[in-house]
Length: 385
Length: 192
Image 1 (spheres, rainbow over the protein chains, first blue to last red):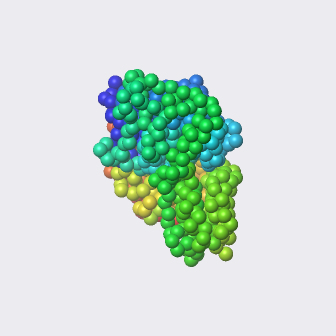
Image 2 (cartoon, chains in turn purple, brown; image 1 turned 90 degrees about the vertical axis):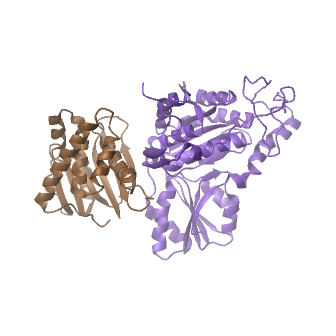
């Protein structure tokens, strides 16, 4: 047996995005992974299976993705930071238990390395076709947080952020990677352990008799306990009261479920993150995320060489959607160009926020490859003319 | 300066590992930026396989080969599929026992071959053919510092095989030195 390597592999690595996501999880304190292998996310699980013994953590290869999602919810309630990873069909199978995680306010992280669909689709090839499923894929009303890395470094960094957001707001957080970012290899710098931001679970200090597991704090998020700490807890997907007991009546639904949405909406400005380049002077802004942002950057540079005033707005957090900046830009630019490897998803959010004040031009791609930069350039030219 | 390299062959030849070692040498040990993207079929071994490596002094946004400046062919299929894509002034390197090159492409400024697989077989492990080729590639083109390449090989191959692989690398570098001497100088970077 080799020596355990510890949770944080400080140093410079040449690493693919999937492996980097696994390392980010370990660095922030994840000690439980349950999953089912699926291309192009398998390397996340593979890395976790190698590394969990280093942190005395648990890796389970489950029978399927339904069980995987269930297992990480259970592990979270046992006090662990937990994660799963999947792609395409597996993401669909996780939707029901994702909703259970939202309803029971269970911190955990789901990495989806997007491939082309529908169905089994393009197992080894890229897509960005699960963006709306990330937002709406489970039934009922809810809000979600989804992050979009565009490099292996960001797979590391944003997986850390995903855990911290999941602990802060008590919900499953999605890392919406894609096949190219997941399989691309680049330098990843892992900082010293004391420079990794770790948000730990907020545990009640109330006496067991006084503790109400679903009584929210001021930020609308309730404090948590772990099973085995001596508190009575009841966790159910049914509409429940502050004690966690099922109360399947309209007044309790009205009291409890809107809060699941409000805890994200009212904190949206703290959660939303985007990167912008040249939007202050722009007359056209390219809105993009994931691998497509790196293709779009080249198209933007080509357009600038033609003398066009083009900006780039990259979504780092896709959900909640950065409504305010799109609304503000729409009042002063000619148009948005939205390239994505799908036939129309995030573009509808841009269009909704632009509300007719600026043109919104989609640059679709059915999947299996990234855009040609020239295709995006042509739509930038159209938007600026 | 942006350099774009495509390494082609079959699954099982270590094509992606060759790209990995090159990219690691550039980005971790030679203070450059590098990206590696790979394409492969559903089969683990025997299907066509290619690694695209971009090495640059500045950050790399677009990680794919747009102007194929350097082609490394370790299979006939890889050679046949990608030779025409070479840009003017491009560099073509291939395994002379696996590729029948015929007439070299007119646009190439530097064409050279190496018995990478035969050399590795003579050393006792055919699996090291990719490392021989990597030495040949860097020796002919100067893509990264040789010491950075050695360090990347040392830290990327299975424990216990470091010395063997470093010897394979030296063999490739030696073949490259001969090719460079025969041509009167190393391959020059083409304008991409």
